[in-house]
Image 1: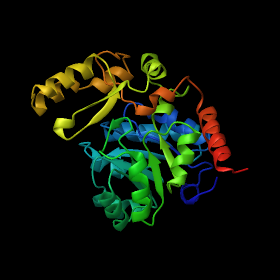
Image 2: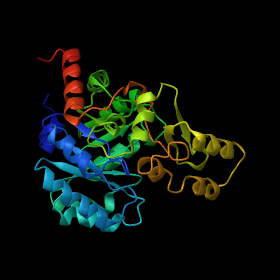
Image 3: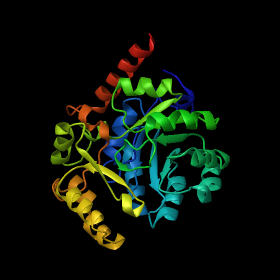
Image 4: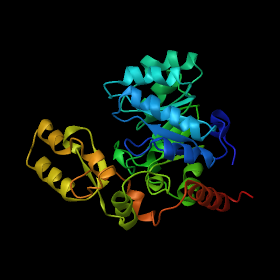
Length: 308
């Protein structure tokens, strides 16, 4: 299963782990890379020195390629962008903004830049700016989402750009991977299924929420603010949606969710915390090692595509 993405990143399988804030730390990233995919350390809203520490810890446990996801709204985005260069990270994925201000610095340091995009226009802009590939992420994904589904978004972006496209959103097994390849993608980015990986450090309560989830158990909050987020339904999402319906302003809604992701991931509060997960959570049935997850996905996809 060789593609332009495996060649570009020096990985065995075209499987990239999503850069999930508070979830994608060095243990998970290193395990995915060791299993033949590309592990990603999620910087999220973390300070730059924390990201530096995570990078150094990952290097202690793997010599395989791994990357860092930088959320461009992070107040320390400038410092994190420099840490990526200083620490010799070779792959960066970006979200929540335009990474053009860092592009020259990263390219000069040999960093492969892969922005996450939710529209054809953004994909074209990133290609013109020097991106090596893009992640086309559909609204089925967990966390911050766009407005177009993966099935509609991926082929339109594939047709619009010449750089490789990585499909994301609603992919958790070989069927999703094979479908993404049929749409023209050359790799997949997977988040939700890796949350229940044995090597993932999220609280057991969080993992069990995903294992128990059904197809209709996710909700999208924040539509009124222009910052929609998909997560598993709970007391917090119910209250958020009620407040949205009643016209609560942005600051009231922000106060409700402040620190809520950490509350779920670290403290295990899956009632009042934000349990980010994609619509594909209903296919996540058990906790498994990263190697087993990737092997299952790739084997199933190859079989469906008739690859020996």
